[in-house]
Image 1 (cartoon, rainbow, N blue to C red):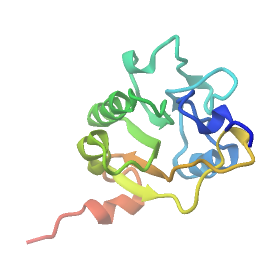
Image 2: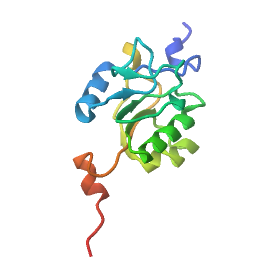
Image 3: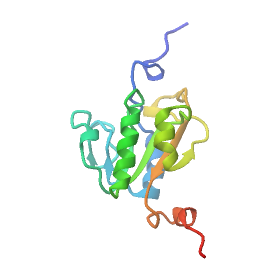
Image 4: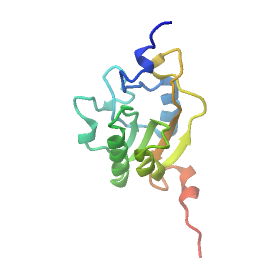
Length: 155
């Protein structure tokens, strides 16, 4: 029996966004900033690397976030939510860990879309060992689908 690939172990918390998956999301949202990238896997012309520490940067515009999936994910989700409160639209690709504090504290404040099946991250032939979700933080009126969802009943 061979040892599991580092891709499917806790040896890394980096899960590169699948190109085709991102392309579909980019077509829908028009991202301007990737806040968790390397020069090799950046999804937008403007991006922050680990060395730049996206948690310390200002997030503006339409933001794509596929954060490290380790212990710091709660910090990334908090930053996404706070950036939304400051006017950014942020779409997060995260593991669907519905039993965690960060999920309840931040993800549940956004629009959640559970992804059917398992994604194949970073061009690997095998699917990830966990389910994924998109969490969107956006203001009403930016996304026509949300206008009805967020509208209040008239008196």
